[in-house]
Structure formats: structure tokens, C-alpha cells
Image (tube, rainbow, N blue to C red):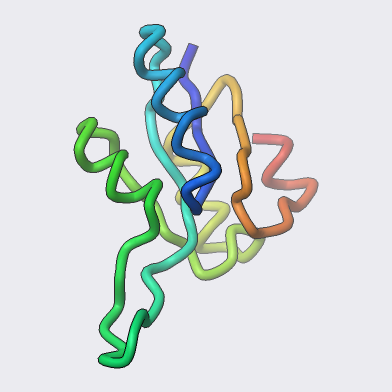
Length: 98
């Protein structure tokens, strides 16, 4: 069963880690785009992206998953199941129908 995991902040890390530890096929991770952080304003990756890259899971960061580009990213993964944990975007009916 191919899983698309949708999450962004620290809150979502235990869920992603558990799925991987239990041997589930996390085919891709979707999270918010990198955002400026600190005084330098240098873009920093969200915590879920950092963990996914460490685990070797492909990461997608659409500006809006409801828009055609985000929908195409989601469709390219062909998930059997989507799991969300503090993703931070609203999923459309088209997103849910994938």
C-alpha cells in the first residue's frame, strides 16, 4: 500500500517516523515550502522535509496542493492512502479523489 504523508511541523514527525519504523511504504511526503527563518531571512526546510530526506523519501512542496501543479504532484505518486498530520493546507475534493 503506497502512502502519501502530508505534514510540515515538528508535531508531524512522530507519525512519519512511526510509519517508517513499522515498515509502511511511504512513497512520498508533502509539506509546506521552505520559509524564511531568523534574522537572515534565509529559507529553512520544514522539520518533516528534513526527516523525509534523511529517510530517503521523495519530498514535494507545492505552494498550494489544490492548484493544478499540486494536484499533478499528488497524482504522480499514485497513493493508495493519504495520511495528514498538521499539513497546513486545505485539501480539495480532487485531492481526496486521487
